[in-house]
Image (cartoon, rainbow, N blue to C red; front, top):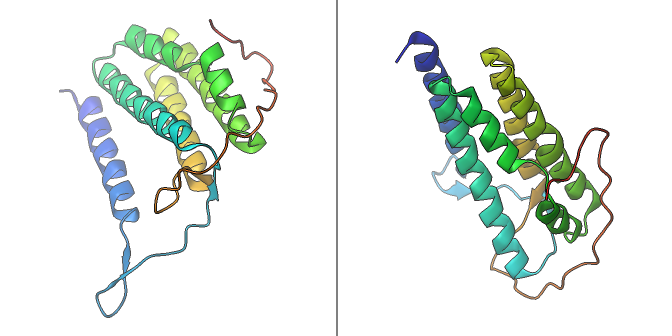
Amino acid sequence: MNNMNRRFSLVLAGVLGAVNILSQPVLAESGTKVHKPDNRTLLTIPYQDRENLLHVMRGNITKLGEMIDAMADDDFKRVAKIANKMSFNKKKGKGLARRGNPAFIAMGVHFHGLDTLAVKKAAETKDRKATLHAMSKMVSSCVACHATYRVMEWPDNKTYKRPKPLPLHLPPGVTVRD
């Protein structure tokens, strides 16, 4: 493993470690766990939709890991291919529209429409630095969305009804794949 890949792996391990630490409950002076109130917006969608959304997001994380592996091997073609799979398509459009929350929809369109396209375009130029920056922005979009929204309420509330779908407003240059 060359120095660039070793540094990238160390940075990735550090980021993942920090995320793990920051997600743990805070300990009070007495040593008991203190849970901060969760002020994120609850997406009030049916239970099955929530399970599907969680499945999709876990898939996005898996694909991001695959992109990181590809970058470690300087396999820009594979990075572009994975980014293209994550890009906006009709199925993602329908899934986002039925969530019924305009800001959540906008974040999803940004991630699947703009961020993935930026990674793909950067990878096609074989510019390592630009590709890593685009991947970093993609991760920032994930973090912003997860900091804003939550999809589960405890205990699991399975009574929500599906909201009416909202129209998608795509930014210039974002196309919908079949």
